[in-house]
Length: 506
Ligand code: BG6
Image (tube, rainbow, N blue to C red; front, side, top):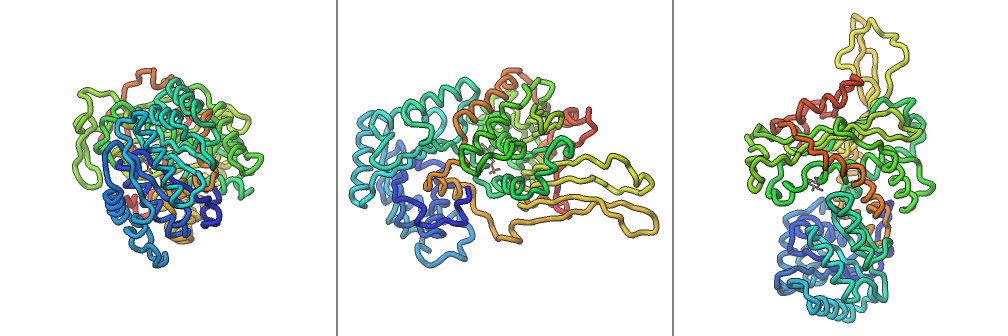
């Protein structure tokens, strides 16, 4: 996880990266641009080659041309990079190959193995391999078995397997998926990606907590009143109805991304900063989450409204959505962690599509003073001490505190101490750059372990089975009003921090 700042060719063994699903969106929009940036930023051109694999037939040249177009479409902060490979086409021509797997018959895997061995022999690679499965869930099992049966799960060097979420759709399927993976690969070979863990601001939650004793000493039930995690999206479901209508907000966002944020905010200090120690603590938090009741959950579904200044359709009008679908596009939850540190502190989680803004924040609200001395002071919009982690956009944090406002009558005002990443360090790396680099160096800290995935599903599966109906909310809002009832028993309110001008900066 500390890898990027000290990154360089020395830390990466020479290897072949085999990407299944190499004609798909993930490869084109995220992986190949991230790989190109890594090559340029850390001089990795002689460290790895890429073999794209997909069902279709394609020549190497066509794959290179497609990849080049993808990179040119998505380029990030290249001004500071050197001249070498300034033209992405040069790198694509040198580093990319393509192999069709057709419908995945045994002979196609044999041909794949031959191709891998030929590329390795031609370039003097010693058998270090990464298999990246950028595939829909249904294709994972057959591909893993195909790799196992053709003897590709192990090699003369190291072999690593990268799997994208979703890791199942409930606890049963998560266990079944792990069984398939473990049937061919050992757990230390497996890198399960939750891309939120690759975001620099998400990793910084741990640094913030454990490098700053000032905060760690108040990180408990004695000082903290409640914690809110908001992952709001302004976009709708786009062209993904086929996937999303069967998934919904709890599966798509809560079980993975929001739960990762919860674990990082709530976990105990690990015994060391190595992968297993951190992942052990994250699992313990999941184990201490109190079983959820339907009362702790509110679902919503967007209706037509105004988003980003234009009229947008409701979920039920989106192309491909089943008529009358009750799939939630919004979920809010009240979660308690039954641990010594967190007993009685509510964690409020919410996420939704077509919400007011694109924004991911963690708001930690501290207790107010035990005695209110400033009763007679006028208080305009006073919020007390709240620490906002702004994970995206405008990455950074704001710590709110009260001050006396100079005026002719006593007044309290809330102001902030603020830190902004971009001002301090320039633009942040894309999550996929961090994660790909960590797979290349064999650092598993930012990847989800098998027991972690299963434990998260164990928490939420009863809520998936509880048939909770979604409440409508207009696109462009903060979700259904009913979500307030999760907070009202304690007099809490949902809170996010918008920039001073109120512009969410989408
Ligand atoms: C994905 C979900 O995992 O995360 C999408 O499947 C969602 O539905 C996306 O839009 C959000 O990621 P980010 O990085 O844009 O916050």
